[in-house]
Image (cartoon, rainbow, N blue to C red; front, side, top):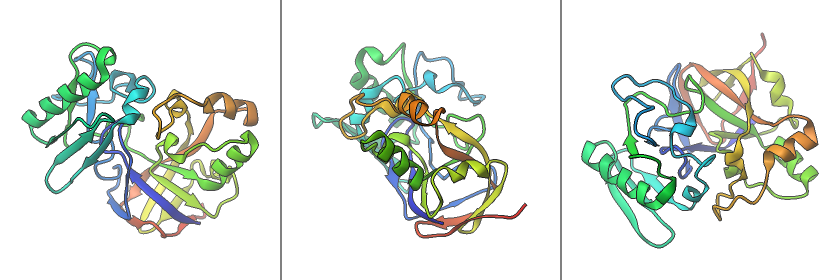
Length: 252
């Protein structure tokens, strides 16, 4: 088995950024993955005491399909986050500075319109991951499982609907569900597989058109009797992994 695609998502709900390689630490996520988020209603997330809160407290595709039309890029060296809207408007500001965060939050709130509940605040708290899980994880999807699902459904489902960090090849369809509780080596890192990924309404959103044009939750339930696609894994030993690196399930 091998890594075929590798992604991070610097801003929760916005653009995937393809990577050739990354290096992770034990207990951490891919660097800069879900490092920024737009909090809605102003109070659920406390940057002075950062802790996990449900994704519905933030701008996310589950609730805000239109944000899939935005294109964003984060420059890790300069801290500049660039966001472009379909109408050509955009912003390019330092996402690590309070002033830049305020301007980015204002731009995103303006784009969202009525969906921007309360007074949205754009956050970055060093070391905090705005993930869907309480603890930082890496998400992996077996390409063969997606292909099996597409073949049975009779329609393509763009992989970016599912916002995984790692897409891998070389395993039988759905065999990854047998890895729960097991340790895998991916390049130079060791991960423990913790759970299946339960899909949410974010997968309804076409990442190209920003339209809700499919219902993967219903489709998976109809085809397989569950709503799972992909697995979560926690990093138990840090290291580097890259596109093309091997993945091995280690003996217990």
